[in-house]
Amino acid sequence: MTDQSQPSPDEAEATEPGAQDARGRVAELHAIRDEAYRGPSERATEAQHAKGKLTARERIELLLDPGSFCEMETLRRHRATGFGLEAKKPYTDGVITGWGTVHGRTVFVYAHDFRIFGGALGEAHANKIHKLMDKAISAGAPLVSLNDGAGARIQEGVAALAGYGGIFQRNTRASGVIPQISVMLGPCAGGAAYSPALTDFVFMVRETSQMFITGPDVVQAVTGAEVSQNGLGGADVHAGTSGVAHFAYDDEATCLEEVRYLLSLLPQNNRENPPVEPGADPPDRRSEALLDLVPVDGNRPYDMRQVLEEIVDDGEYLEVHERWATNVICALARMDGQVVGFVANQPQVLAGVLDIEASEKAARFVQMCDAFNIPILTLLDVPGFLPGVDQEHGGIIRHGAKLLYAYCNATVPRISVVLRKAYGGAYIVMDSQSIGADLTYAWPTNEIAVMGAEGAANVVFRRQIAAADDPDAMRTRMVKEYKAELMHPYYAAERGLLDDVIDPADTRGVLIQSLAMLRAKHAELPSRKHGNPPQ
Picture (cartoon, rainbow, N blue to C red):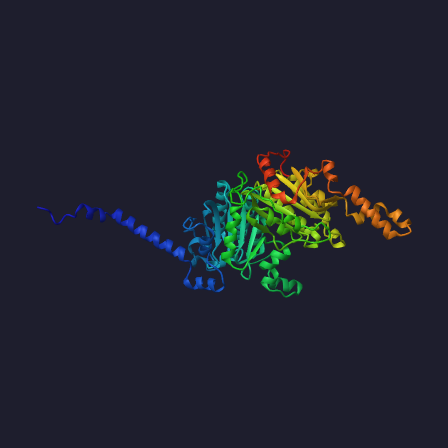
């Protein structure tokens, strides 16, 4: 006979105090996590959406592969007191941190949650970012920051400022070790703007993201100038005028998709090569169109982007700083599936001359490619450095030296091709053989010289021209003579300053064969703490 007063074994297990507590605590954990995931309130979420902005978690979902995000310190809360903070201790403390995958490869990410303290950085908030950055460096994986914050949390005083110092120090330590990408999706003011400035790439969204050291109110108080937030530090300003932003897009979804594309072109760290993606574009494909794209007349402009489209795999490339310093093009693309970096003069803008901004733009791009094992291909059509009082007073010597230093310091495979003209110091600076290019080629339309024939003739033959009965006829004759003797297409090749003069239609095949030969290149710089590049 069964004793009805005794519980069954299943009932006994279910009523054990320890088991009951465990289930209760698990339920409590899920409730807390649900609270952390929801954020402060539906009203705060609606306000974020009303500004045309996504929440931090929605942004992470767009950036990472579905279901891959692993969050760190979801339950972290600040310990600050005073100014009402002790009554407001939301989970996450206003920043979501963790890791996931993009195209199957690990990526670390942190995202400011503007709904909590306006995304402002406090001590706990900063410590979360510090920990994530340390893990990204040690794991050797890219770091993406989704920025939407109001700067330092004023109520926490110097502790918040010190938090930024820790971020800057880690940005610098990670520089050239792992790719760092800053995505500006809201305001970024004051010292907070220096973290994006230290990273490899900066993305911005029009109308909703701004960056500035001092806001419009301070600018007006100090200078009297009235300016809006977007007029002072919006996406178009930084993409086209200041050069702070490398990319600018109309909406967050497009922006984050382009971040994913950029990550597909970069290695995980400086010890790896970029991922290879073999395609269907034949490596030996000829391009007869190149014979018509580039005019023989050096004074006629053309679009260098069309040349790139003919050379690279499937005509696809990602242009960096597309709207800033447009007289030079910097782009990432693939050649036979291998990622390469292109630096090319743009004859459509200022005839492709090098100036202060173009030199800075190309120098930074060359340094990035060298840091992350991306071969550099240089396409030359350059008449020289831009002359002018503003350029000289602005330091064109110093800024041009940055590009020279970057090329000379680069140890990745380097190949240059002279499409048309290459004059003066600009020819030397644009990765000539004399500064260490591994291979140098030229098209039959090339003119490599100290300067253009007209200018050279006026200098070299000025006495003969002045003494002639018909100076104009003499000048024309001397120009032809100078071109025939010193600027014919094979002059540099005859003296070993070019490795070959090639058929333009074969450019793609020649470059791919050359890259294959250089793939195992190993070069070392002298032992030193670091160089001292021109600033």
